[in-house]
Structures are given as structure tokens and as C-alpha cells.
Length: 332
Image (cartoon, rainbow, N blue to C red; front, side):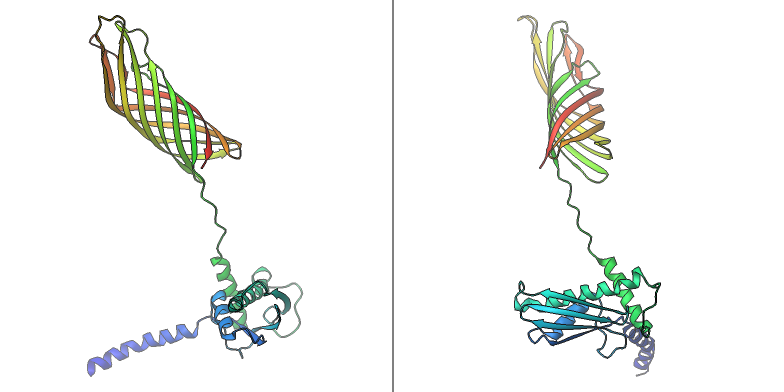
């Protein structure tokens, strides 16, 4: 018993604080008269109105409450607002014909919330009118509650969503050269990319080939197939999007020997290669669904591939490379 009594005494301050918090709960100073709308469920309208305003409605006899009188006639409803908080009277007629009977309570509640909020907005936009209105001032508690509701509705209003930027598919002509004993490689790329507000990503597949000059006993055909992924930043300098970033690229390189005479033995071999790169690009939209992009790239080979000609390494996919690409793209 002593333990129970001690616990109860400790709980008293918590109960008092809870009761005070409940007592301080904001009540929406609105009263709705639906006597002339027999087909509308008044309790449901008041419940939904409280939800829309973000606070339960104050008791009907509360001083300074905004009164909304609703008159229903066939397929229309007339709203008359008598607002002692802002000293305004407003009227509006609603068309109910497009709403089924079981949805009209919700429709009316939303319309009343918007109408009352319109009247209360003056508490924020013009809290001290230059010319005072006639009549006694509204109770401070009612003004405070209305202003709080307006602020919370404004802060929680859903901003129109911005559609996500569409990815773009590009087809590009590419020239790449490896500075360590490699011919210029020419080919094409298919690239998909997506620009967000500041960052962008790109993923591409590239096919390139090039024939070396005469290297002693013949020539070597170099073919490179690879995929690259990059992340970057960009900004807009009308009419261009200018950007740059970093990425990684890797794939397979094939070196095929082509002998000068039949007596010379030549072979073909494939090997993986890998490198990292940086890029810069400028993109311009030619027409709403067609863009042109110029890209420059430089990278370094981490996993190289080399070919021997008469014992000497004369052709390789190795070291630093530089590349440029010109492509056209469409969103998808």
C-alpha cells in the first residue's frame, strides 16, 4: 500500500500536465448551421471540417466564433460567412450536381474550410488594418486560434510536385587514342544518362577499332569493347548545360596481327582492361525532344593490354588515353 501510494503521488504532476496540455489544445473558432440542409449529415461535416482545419471545432456557444450558414436548394448550396474575427461577411454558391449524395458532406466540409481560411488569411496578410473596422474586437483567444490554424495550413500545404527529369538515350560518334603505342580508335557508343538539379549520371557501351601503321612485320588491328559509368555535376549557361565528372571504364581488348607476308606467323588474343577517367561535356537542346552533346574525356589505364611484334611491345591499350564524342539524344 505504501508503494502504491508513493507511485500515485509521483503520477499527480504528470496527470496535471496532461490535463493542462489537453486544456490548451487549439480549437477552431467555427460554428456551422446546417439546419436548411436536411440531406447533409451535420456531424460528419463538422468532423471533416475539423480535420481540414487541423483542429477540432470549438463549442457552438464560444464567443467570437466564425458562423457559417449553409442553405441547400436542389443541386446548389449557398454559404454565408459571418466572421467577427476579421469583421467580414462573405457569400458563395456551390454546385453540388456533380457530387453523389454520399459525398456531399465531405465536399461541403472542404469548401467551408477553404472559405473560412480565405477570411482568416487577413490575420496574416493585414493584421493591423489602416482603417479600423466597426464593432467590438474579437476575443484574443479566437484570433490567436484562427491565426495558428492559418499558419499551420500554409506550412503543411502540399507544393506542386516537380516531375522527375527523364533519362536520355544518346547515340554518339567516338574517337579515342591511347598514348602508349596505340592507333586512333574510331567507333560509336550508346549512352543513357539523367540530369537532376545539380548532379547527373551516365552509363554507356562503346565499340572501337583501329588499324596500326606498318610495324615491322605487319600491322595490328585493335578492337576495344567496353562499358563506362560516370557521376558528375552540371550547371546551366543558356542555351547549354555545362558539366563534368569522374567515372570508371572497363571491358575487353582484342589485338589481331595481320602479317606482311604469309611466311610470318600472326595471332589474335583477347584480354580484359580497366581504367578510370574524368570528363567534361556541353549539352544543348536543339528542339524539345532532341539534344546535341559534345564530350571530352581523359583517363588512365589501371589494367593494361599489350601486344608483341617480333618480341617488342609496339601496340597496347595502356597508359593515358584521350577521347572525344559527339552525340544526339532523345528523352525516353
